[in-house]
Amino acid sequence: MTDLAAVKRALTAQRIETPSWAYANSGTRFKVFAQPGVPRTPEEKIADAATVHRFTGVAPVVALHIPWDKVDDYAALGSYARDLGVEIGAINTNVFQDDDYKLGSVTNPDAGIRRKATDHLLEAIDIMGQTGSRDLKLWFSDGINYPGQDDLRDRQDRLAAALREAYDRLTGNQRMLLEYKLFEPAFYATDVPDWGTSYAHCLELGERATVCIDTGHHAPSTNIEFIVAFLLRQQKLGAFDFNSRFYADDDLMVGAADPFQLFRIMYEIVRGGALDPAYGIAFMLDQCHNIERKIPAIIRSVMNVQEATAKALLVDRDALTKAQQSGDVLEANAVFMDAYNTDVRPLLAEVRADAGLDPNPITAYRASGYDEKITADRVGGTQAGWGA
Ligand code: LRH
Ligand code: MN
Ligand code: MN
Image: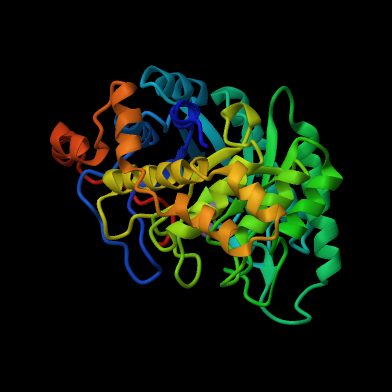
């Protein structure tokens, strides 16, 4: 039997972090379709994130990407965010959009370029100090396109040295999240291609370093929930970058392509006792909304995570354990599927109403006039810096 009051409490306490770059214009390498009303400044991105939080109640954190969100005064940006009711979350580093990084950033054969890339990581840690952010999020586009192009093992050594330098700079509650990605932009060999590589580096670094799973960064058919279960068992899962993929790193709305996969992931989170914000996992979105309106798309994504979470919380764990231990394969699967097939929308509507929110965040947003206001006020919105 599931304790409904406990399920509601868990859903009310859930925290989802939205990405500043998802509010800005983005596209594929073929075309960026500019939308009216998109943010022109980091402050306007934060205002949009605060709007998503206002209608969902579970998105009080916004991740930044440097230099896409470069400002002169990060402390002021942090207090601006707090005034709007949100916190600044992960500081994402960017060592992938500079000509110098053609052959890699922290793994580049040129020591001068490695220095420049590592200095950017240190700069991001300084920014964290000013914004009050806990998480330094690292993703490296580093890799090679051709067999023999560079020494695979030396590149691991260079990576380890840069990570160590950044890690040693962390203080207080600061953490390092190391994201992996199978391929792109490097196609033959990527320097942090999978969770195993990220895990091994994090293990070597120490307890402040944990793995970030971007759900769009795996080979087709990879069992992501297995990775979640494994890393939780090792206390090495620090964050998610949620999004959906059909083919590559599509960055579509989380829960859109495969809501069942999202449910299976969230089940492992619940099973591992890792849903509570106090556990420390950052549940971030990493998405781009190229053809759809951005704010309602992010609200929809937050709702998709909530629905998968609610279903995961509804799994009858006692019945599941009983079926598993008696070897009743079909019953175990049925218990699991019963939870997945439950319509949790009424439950979530109740959770929202209890929190004083409109039960339907999308229609409430549409009726709020915010979209019309930003369209009128913001002339000449900027590009995310991504997909140009
Ligand atoms: C790389 C990635 C990484 C970047 C973001 C914009 O594909 O997932 O997290 O920082 O996209
Ligand atoms: Mn990502
Ligand atoms: Mn990605």
